[in-house]
Length: 285
Image (tube, rainbow, N blue to C red; front, side):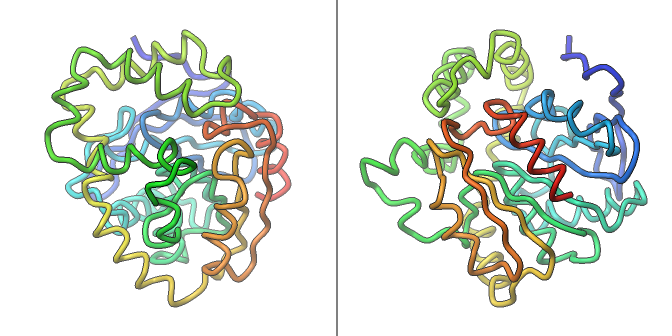
């Protein structure tokens, strides 16, 4: 059974140009779209959503192939961004503040660069964006290996899902603990939900499509990086994870950037520091 949305929120499926998205929505006021990453779902925003809903219409969306949205035809973020532009048009939201975390930030950058009319302002949260982040962000160094090893593992065809099948709980428990500063943030209920989602048939393969298309995504982003984003951008790094490294990565592609580091926070910012993140997003969006 899927996790229940927070009080005042409801889930539904929305089809936009043939792509079916899983959407969890609530609140009232100006809209804001929240998009998370791998290996999570809309559920990573469960603590942030009620904090924004008092003054915002909050729309949390599972990216294609993640959570309960249908898988994409291709995993490169130019293709995914086009599907999000269609979703935003279908929901009559354009332009909307787009809050992207992890792979959601990959999508957010591509969407803002390629479909600027869809994005009013953009928040990018703790993500090494392919083609934008410098090569040293992926280097084989003691500091970087814990942060980026999965880029290589996930990009290998067929092997990751073969090794992890039936061991999803072991893998996810380790991943969440290794990348968190606050290990209590992803509790037993959250782990159960993510295990449920990624134990379904082909769920692992669908989620890994983003990593297997990473060279296409990087080439696409290098092309659009020639022009800076016109939208205001908020960057947020987990102090115990990417931190200031993310600022150095995104600053060259932003004309108007505000950047914040949340201390004592690992990679899972929406779950480890929901109150501080909600404050930043409420001010920004």
